Length: 450
Image (cartoon, rainbow, N blue to C red; front, side, top):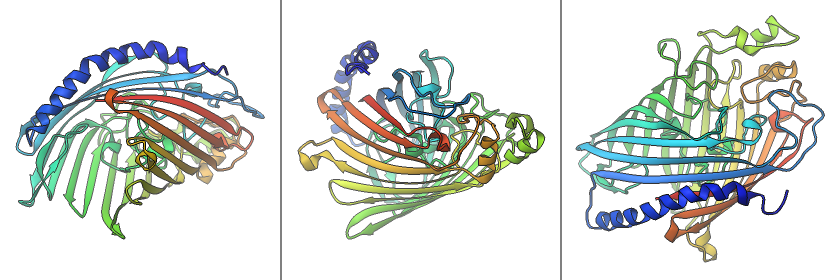
């Protein structure tokens, strides 16, 4: 690959980003002056734009199938831009609206790895930019104490005096990871790790359409020491489908999470326990094998009665002013097909993040993480017989755990609100197959946030 291969991929995309930057930098600076002179604001306005170009070096494979990662391909680029609009309705109530545009492709069309390498890509056929509504929801907080705290103006968050202890209800369209499985160091592929199994718990098959959004409600009880939240949301009409299923009595997702804040030697940590149960017209791996052992097809045995249940545990710990770590683990029963996120039935990951202020680069971040993903015995048997899921399937399987190492460095350019992040991923046994790989993936990410 020529050393300057990324340049022609990114250059045409820089023009609209620069126009947005020139227009909004002044607006943002003026808004900041206003914000600094008032405590509460009735509006919140932010923008993000992210461009990620990825390339993997050629690798060897004994065989390939319909959903395999291609052994050789060109650079693939994804592009997203989002406007985050928030408006206060009345005391402790707000509405949030996020129009979003996305386009581009992932490596091999976002097939061939359960822990896929770019969290900004979707399994959508057209690479053209498309405009859609990402989020549109109402939030109402019910104060349970007189004590308040000043929240900062942020993405989908108003600057206001919010009750320290409250019960909140959110209803509308959103992404479940907005409220569940939070992590200070490994949660946002636009600024942190890019791999799917690091941006969220890989074994959590969270309800969402192809782009990652769903419709439903979230009820949360919040205190300074911890929180408990519960969500009921819609599932897609078929695996990884773009349309949500309106048969809500037969197809739905239930998610619950509790979190507790702790302190170790004066440093803050958080423990989270997540449980979920999804019901949708899934297919069973064993039913597909029984129906056609030679060429199993899980789409031929789908039924509304099928479920998927699982749990996740995570821990994040502040290690001082300049570092923090995280650990995640997740499991689901693996009897029925993955319906919305990715084909991981069990996972464990850990990583550490360092603040660049330690070496005189305030705002920079260097982080590294390791994740190991696995699948159930039923899932293995289905893939080994030549079956296909919606993201992986090599036509055969010599099973071993999929192991991924990722590291990135984020260079910030504060006065331009930009961050430039080179990224490297090393993938062993892509799609759980010892007969393919390993794969070296390099990426360059440009992120603008106002």
